[in-house]
Image 1 (tube, one colour):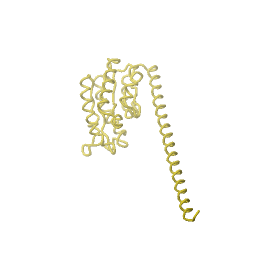
Image 2 (cartoon, helix red, strand yellow):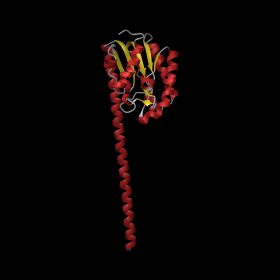
Image 3 (cartoon, helix red, strand yellow):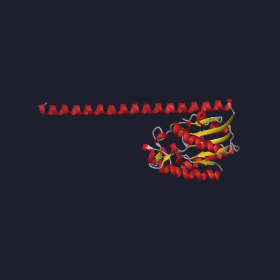
Image 4 (cartoon, helix red, strand yellow):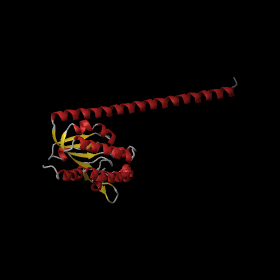
Length: 241
């Protein structure tokens, strides 16, 4: 083999080896990412199931409750004993929850309780996850009709979606559209509508007030104080302290 052919051969081998190494690295990274995704999904399922198990136990041991709070992480992260000390409450919020998930867990989260009132705040994750408003409205109908059928004595406080900030602020127009529908449906179904969007919104930026949020979505203590004041005012119209 001539020197020139040998050099070409050596370069070709090096390029092929580099290609194989690159492909192996890509495959390894994809496998690693897949395993990480699967582990995250497993932890989420485990958290969800633990929540439902806790709800079942609460329903058996404490059948009499004033208010059941249904929702996602905004509810899940709220210490109800701090912000609603005048009432006995069940916190039935689950981080990452959507209207789809809530429809499927209404039995254990609400129907198996005997509350005087229900506070509903759901739908934000649907919008952030790209679900259509029409599908969310359909789930709203399922949630409200189910609550009305199984818990006809319970008053329903239906909260608006909250204003967002930072990189999530682009969804605020959709949130406002959703809130218009929530208010309309609340009137249609005889629920008490509570606007949380406006009191949390900074009129100068049209985003959530900075001190009310951790990162643009979830609430600080100051944010929860604003929210709980609005919800408590609604609850006081039909519940005694």
